[in-house]
Image 1 (cartoon, helix red, strand yellow):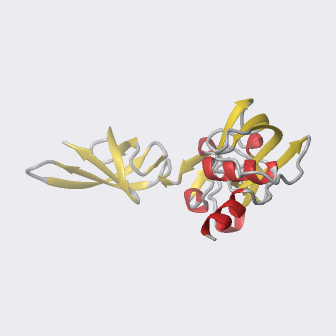
Image 2 (cartoon, one colour):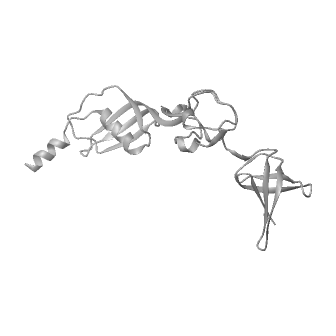
Length: 210
């Protein structure tokens, strides 16, 4: 009885599309795949293929698959494969320097052939960032167009913190450059009328190591 059930499972009807789709889902990361079998895609009343290999071509694209069953039977299947993945795009045209909010972006799935290098797939990666240049509407957001929001702008009054192991001194300063957290900028110290270089370590705070 058990042997009969096993034999029935092995020769259950399957189709080339079923086998190829399962192979792609198990071996590639894309959440959506469109598959078109070129040629015969009728159900097969034979042992389910034990292994699948790419005989020629590459995914995505036009690919020939080699399907082999445990009995040694081989079948070649040709298919056109398209893959899709998630990206973050902007709902409206945006200008250089604008800060990105949740209202400005949305998540959509597009053909991976149209996904630019460095495209972002998580909304949280964009939030709080500013655009390094203007972009048109419905464009995939990439790392290259994002910058950290400036904590200090040119002309802002800042607090200068000069410290070492022995002392800590604070003074008023005027930023001569714009910068984000962690960036080094030049600051004018009015009490000495000297320009010094320090690192932005907080909102309107520039730290100088001594």
